[in-house]
Image (cartoon, rainbow over all chains, first blue to last red; front, top):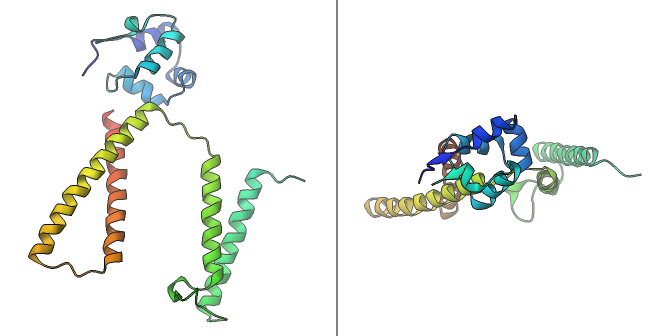
Length: 65
Length: 134
């Protein structure tokens, strides 16, 4: 399964946040952020909700299947 | 006075290492008894205690070290574990066939050690490969 929309990088860059900083905020490794941004790994629901909380948006704004 | 955890670890490693060296020296120069509870291959008690000390120190050091484990790593490790078990079944089948053709004569304990080491290596390699794909 692949994500139709993945705007994580877009949102992160809009917030002027580095991958490292985002990874620390979420509690994952930087490699995981890279994998999600590149579409290699699909985040779980709790992780997607954490992203949505940090970027103050809806989950469907970030990811779409 | 409280000893810092880093100093304590160094102290434990130091004592264990010196016990190991001393035990090996005693064993090498054949001073005192060299049997450990009937298992002469272990050497003397000092070597045994040194190894136990080293293991305990390592376990303490590893448990104190903060490790970042996230869901991606867990996902990959599950996949690697699945592949490892699948390879165990395949290997068992191949071993059965080989044994049918020509009887495997190596001792049971050696065979099990090879099998466990092989599985660990397969798991490690699979994990490292899967890290690149996810």
